[in-house]
Length: 361
Ligand code: TLP
Image (tube, rainbow, N blue to C red):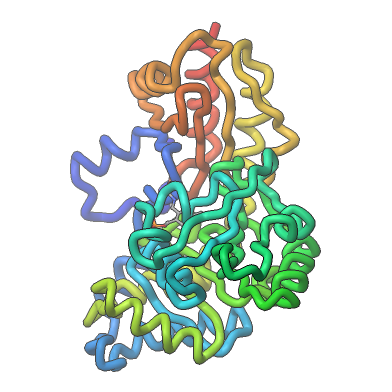
């Protein structure tokens, strides 16, 4: 049922059992392709803490080129890359403006406070898209007794808002306003290639005015590990120091970067398939009694839908799905999240839909 992407000649029983599952918990669950595994085995490596890993260097150079930036840096995770960016952009005692459900605030272990000594200044936006006018009103006035705004952080696509895509003009307007106010803008672009696919624009164009971008190789692009931070040479130089503070010096990381290079070069071109599968699932689920979902809002590979009308909690719902080999997570007692990716094909999506239709019948 799953795509054949991750099948290898050395498949174990465990692999086969796993390949029967329809795993919609996240696009982080994708397993490296045969080509990636081969590239990892053959990767030329060196000690990256000395800057001597040629494969890491090549990956960083390619990321900088693709985003039309001066420099890029390889991180083990998106969380570490986001938090390094926040640390470089801010000072202790400042505020970070973000959308209320932003990953940097809700899912990164309060590192805004723990590590950067800042607090979030959240803006609620049902659609997940915040606009300059809302941000402008949240910027602290320049009075000595008010904590100052150190950063605006955006998320595109917005994970918990159902993979919502922020239009480029909205980001550009935010950057113009924030920069005039002397405030930098960071973009959590964990799924920026999904946004670019949905918008039909290159990533460089949709991120042109932000000061830094984090993107993940290990989600829809299919790498087993890794995220990148891109920005100016000076910014990346400072982020490099912060990465080391966090214990992110990875030595012979070329084995990981080799998979990352394949993800970066070949991953983006197939993301439209994941979007089409998410749309397919959304169209069908929107017709199921007890499920509340606006299929028109599903733009990328994430669906968030309300199951409270079924009389089940998301824990119960997930349990019922798991009994039929479909894995998915709730994000609270009412809302379920499905994420499509390269290891679930159309047949797998059809199976997931049929299981839900049965459960809700
Ligand atoms: N997201 C994960 C979970 O942490 C929720 C997922 O399954 O979607 N920014 C965004 C927008 C993300 O969605 C994630 C991961 C990250 C950053 C962090 O990336 P990692 O997991 O590599 O630290």
